[in-house]
Length: 144
Length: 144
DNA sequence: TATTGTTATACTCTATAACTATA
DNA sequence: TATAGTTATAGAGTATAACAATA
Image (cartoon, rainbow over all chains, first blue to last red; front, side, top):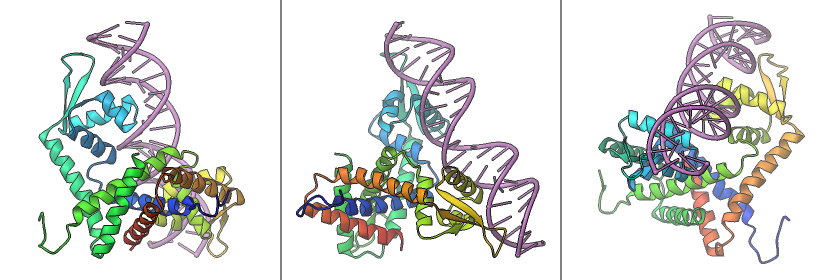
């Protein structure tokens, strides 16, 4: 099981390198951008694409309905989203981004991207191109 | 602040692409490898390099002393580590990997790497080389 | 006194089960 | 009855504060 055949690439060492790099960056980003917690940030990001019901959001985030209910309540308390009853089905509530939520989302993105950009300042143009290429491939592969 | 100068690369879009790819993979790995929790897995990984005190481990993981104390207690209950009083300073305790802990670490690594490797099966050799190159650069940059 | 580690306690994010209100 | 959402409750993992043992 250690090697497959003479002309097949062993994926495990590549997988490990990619995994360790990704996990390392993800952890550093999380540790350095405490202003808006990841589970709230990602909900705002979903809502940027348009209003959604709480159930929708729970499904997209693969989180339980009560967890999403709490997250949305917290976002509403902070003024980042509003909840309105769906006119066509009064059981559902439509969650929408407010202007303030849009600003919070932008700031969260800015903080995260600027932290990563600061890590890249000493890279050569070739290295930046390689990083971008690898990232594009990785997203394609993960979201396939 | 949106652009720096005509001949300087804007790092923000690259940073975002790299960040989103890394966070996406990290989240998927976490969701698909529940056997050994991340905070226990990483402690075992540190101990692979040799025994350490609880304080050492807390510092390396950037976690509070009580949190590390709890983690080490759980690892000890599972038989993955042993604690012995430091002969040269009886306040300290030396934490060491057991044979069982070494096996748990290997299994945790195997599960994680195989999950990622499975995502890579449809990549071409060129794409794999690009992914590896990007990952190497990213680790260098994050751990600089 | 200062330091190492643990115990006591609390906060955050998660889950399942029970409940309310609509359909 | 079934479904959308919330409230009640509990389980992880984290933290700070208080404590015990040792230096």
